[in-house]
Amino acid sequence: MTEVGMAFGQVRYNVNLATENVKKRQNLTAQTFNGVQIRPKLALGGTVGADWYNTVLLTPVCAGVRYDLAQPGKKNLRVFTSFDTGYGFTWFNEDPTGYETRGGWVISPGIGFRIGRPQNANFIMSLSYKRQEAETDKPLGWNEIHKVEHRVYNRVAFRLGVSF
Image (cartoon, rainbow, N blue to C red):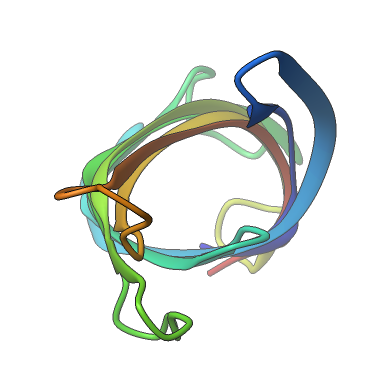
């Protein structure tokens, strides 16, 4: 299964000690799941992806499960669930001078539709929740000895793709 889509969420951040802002964000997301069909309704495998957030590019590498909710047969529309968990790496991220970003844990449950005959390539539409963590060491300011920003990206992802 290979999918590309958009991840939607909100970000809360402080401009200074007295002002807090909230903004909506849309980010590009892509992933591919490759696995083994254990049973007619169950597949186990691995997921590798790329999530482009405004300040970091994370590469999640996860263990994944795909489970068909309907009985396998000749239906052209099937509902499936997904669950991925693993670690988001910063292999392809380029930090500005003085910053150092590290990835973190990822968890992503979802639901989707496969459209097409079971024995052929299928079109996929999926909706999932994705929670990713990251940490950034920031340049030190006046009279600071340690400055770390812990980020948690909570997003709802809508993806389109193909399954073979």
